[in-house]
Image 1 (cartoon, rainbow, N blue to C red):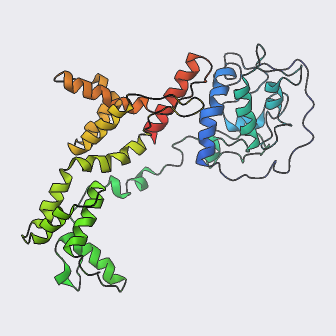
Image 2 (image 1 turned 180 degrees about the vertical axis):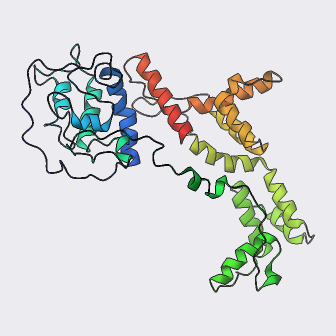
Image 3 (image 1 turned 90 degrees about the vertical axis):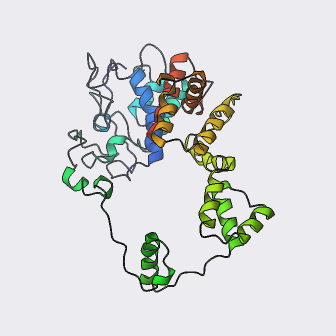
Length: 357
């Protein structure tokens, strides 16, 4: 963007929200900024309006919330919540011949709409999550940039349970020792007794096999399976039933679906033009097979993120690892995107988002 050749009159009218502290941006608002607003600023503005600009134009920087609110030589670049009084929006709309940015060509309508929507919602920005950032809508000038590590207490962080080495803990003492069958039961019963309650009666064998079957396979047991379990009075009948259900192909189908939800599995691209993925089922079957084979979790992740780069003992293993990388491909895609570079950037952004979450 360039600086207009005339000096703009400072804004005299501002909405009531200006100067008032706004609520912290929500995760959805931050996601909108990162996906729809920041790419526009990076692609079309940062060359002349950022800390890394070779030649800063008009004293305006757009690469931090403080700089955006402070503005440049002509005043604040935005008024959070008011698109009609935001110089940035006026510039990209090309409604003022003396203030048209970028100067060579007007932004695509989709990009302008994203900027308008961002300002209208109060200009949510990741910097606002920093305790030293100025309040959104404040016009007091830029605040010093805070180091991401400035408020970290490393020693206190190391006290969090997941950073401590595991140690053996003695099960708590309980009153109803006859109910206990394993040390885990003591932990459960101690809390039950602390609440002044008593354990529920043991489930009958028909109820137990139904609970196990629905939990591990998502299906009810057959009449024959119920009858066999009711007749089996051996001490390891329950353990045998668990092993039997875990070995069922239905186990992977039941529990693999939870990973497929996390992996945003679908058989089409979604968005404006819904294009089918005719081979998506191959990735689905890979996930099911991985659960049924009890594949180690770290291996499961590596194959999905970099299966094409891992060594393979044979063609079958290589094919399996290639199919695993379907994780990176099954996400939603906008096929109406203008230009291959933008399509690539959007796809990579979606992949990073899925991996990061």
